[in-house]
Length: 431
Image 1 (cartoon, rainbow, N blue to C red):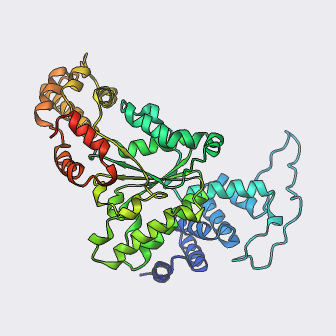
Image 2: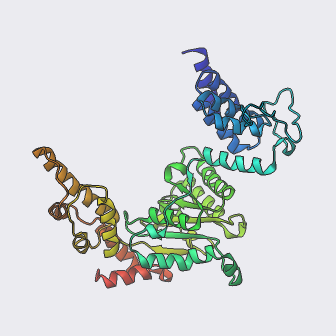
Image 3: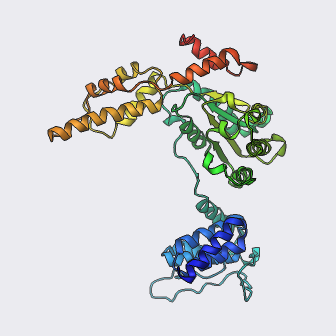
């Protein structure tokens, strides 16, 4: 192993042991850059800027890494933060370029490696804030602004109305919310059988609010080292507060917030406690942070998470209704070769199918048409017979969930929290 590789391996191990050590990360970035590994170096410098947004050494390192990678516009943006002139200044044809003269020339120390930059060294405060916001979003690539809205959700009108009444209406009308004393603190829990679009609805909610969407899964939180899972929960909310308005989407929330009475290990209880702390309405720090949780098993959620100020609003996301099923079928078939199809007839025959089941139905029908085309050597469109045949092999997957849900709705409906599900089961004569 080359000497530089040994040094990089040693520094990487040290950084993993002390992930918040900005000086160490910058040193690793410098060594990676010197070894020609500019992409990895840029990642290290960006991580430092998440921890210390005004670290001059990290900004300069990111600039040098971008130059090495050929990202010249980004390199110039980093340079502007350092008070450096752009590589080329626009000028009129035939005239020399006007030299860059900052309003107040920055006083750069002889060794700027780790000194933070003062506000007087920035071109303007607005430029600095704007650039840092873009920088943080680039480094924290899990945040996005969804383009979808509830208009893109087929059917499910009752779910949309419930969301509008309990969440979206107050969120989009702050003056009326203030007049009526309506608080948005706390969270919204989406529950129902798997594959019915809870994640898509959460993204659509973020799109309706014009907020950033921060999806958090088990792999983002759970860690084998003691205390690291709790730290990950805290950092999730710190990031969301910094980028408010932001929707934090906690998928499989029952695994993160399981009943503490069912947890034998203290480490698992610590995650629940940390989540309770971050969501506590008395903190007053979550303005503009909307917390959405999704679960297939709400009965496994710790009762403390269902108290007011936490997940105190619930929405039951059931299998798509007929109109939604037709919309889902049309969506999955729209870019494929088809002859005239009666998707409404298939919609009538697929009660209790989840959105995922319908996608599989379309895939199965497509495979039949593809296999026939390969065998004959002539491409043919997907036909109604292909969908009818697929119906024979693709069955609804929601049955086991309804079996379990029925027992909880009948015998564990404390405080009427499963009344909506109970009403649905009665309408469908499930018991």
